[in-house]
Structure formats: structure tokens, C-alpha cells
Length: 315
Image (cartoon, rainbow, N blue to C red; front, side, top):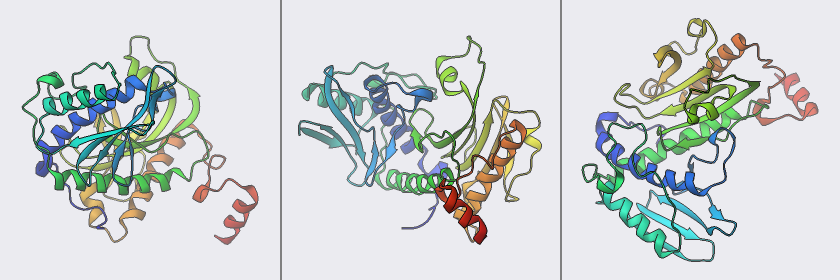
């Protein structure tokens, strides 16, 4: 499998816009049917060996325990119920409206009736899913490539996450923003204005240094690895980043550390380069927030003090 294949946004904009809405429909079902977790950890998708999964949800007497998977090898939507029943349908050739209606018909046939707010979240239009016949391009080749890149990034972020022993999120794929991220928490609670929206109040109730990858959008039409610290400390955008191609860019009143995917693809050691970038952005945020990086280090995922001492002695 090619490492980091090309994925220019212009090549798959229509397919991305269609599949993103498919993902939001399934994601809203996940939101409605799962137990709430701190910082919205219950909401994102997780990659599988065939595509994406909601993970199990429901159960506990209110509705059947079930799971929804995107099989992005066979290009089918699969609903599994934990009593052994299963139903699936093809993703190819469907508009958003067709996908929405077929999914809810399928769920009802299995005795599952979630209620969702059936309009896109933070997208270019707010056409209800059941009425959206404009977004209707599902390209199997491009969607499979998106999933392969996503899966590679998951492994890379998981390797990066291993070096931090503090509270950290899973590596997960957010269906509303269509990015994938892992977040480190400093342990400090943040005072957020009650006027902030409920998504922000929960997501940023603690100080965080987050790292991830997005596939590009109209504002920034190129895929990239990124990192940010929130709340942003004064002077963050002046901190050094590695490699030289990395940069700080303005983003909604704060700054993102960015390393473009196409720059990474041309490098001799793309994995090592991304890890170097993510660590430099983390160190920048940690310095300015006064985080004790040594105390929270777990190099290679090791917290065993004896083994850590042995590993340090070998360096």
C-alpha cells in the first residue's frame, strides 16, 4: 500500500461533499444513541480494517444494541444488531436524500428509531438531508483512497500519542468537521463564557494541545497536518516549528501550526517528519503553558520507571 497517496482537494470535492453528509447522518445517529462522554469522546468515528464504525450503541433496554459501519472496500453501509440480525445497502449511486431515507428505513426494519436533527452541521448549506438531491456523487476509488490515508494517519497519530502519559483522547475521526485528531490535556480547567455554544463549552472545558489532520476545505484547499493549543497562550505563533516547511497560520482568531500533506509526501522520511512537526508544536504549547513535559513523558508508550531508566541509559 502506497504511503500517503496524493489527495488534492479539487480532485474529490464533489465526492467529499457527498460522503461528508452521509457521515453526518450516521454521526448524528451515534450522537443520539450513545452515552455521553467528557469532551464529546462518544461522538467520533473510529477506523476499522474495512472502513469506519460508530462502535456499539443503544441497548440498556431503550432500543436494540447496534452498530453502523461504512464498508469502504465493498462500498456498503452495514447495520449490525447484537441479536444476530444485519442489513446493508450500497453507497454507490446515492444522493444524500436517498442515503438518508434508505438508512432510516433499514433501521426501522430492525426496530431502531433514533431521532436526529436532520440538517448539515457547519457546512456550505443547510438543506435538510431528506431533501438533498444535489449532493449525489459517491466515487468508490476516491472514497477508498480517503479511508486508506485516514488509516495511515491514525497509526501515525497513535504513535505520537504513545509519548504522553497524561490524559489524552483516543485518536478519532470527527464527522462534523471531517478531520482526525488526538488531544493532550494539561489537567487545567478553563473558565469558558456561558455565552459560548455547548459544543465549545464541553470540548474546551480543559486546557488542551491538540494534533491532527484535515483533508482541506474551501478556506484552506489543501490537506495538512495541524496542531493548536487552546486557550492559545500569548506568543504561540512566534514559537519555532520543525521542519522548515511548517508554519503558523491565523485561524478564527487564534493560530494553527500547519504542515502541508503534499510537502510531507515528497520527504525522505515522511513519518519521522510528521512526528517531528507534531512534537515541535506540542513543545511550543507546553513551554508557554508551563507544562512539565518530562513528568508527562512516556517514550514509546513506556511508563514503567525501571524500563524508562534502562531506555534512557541506552540513548
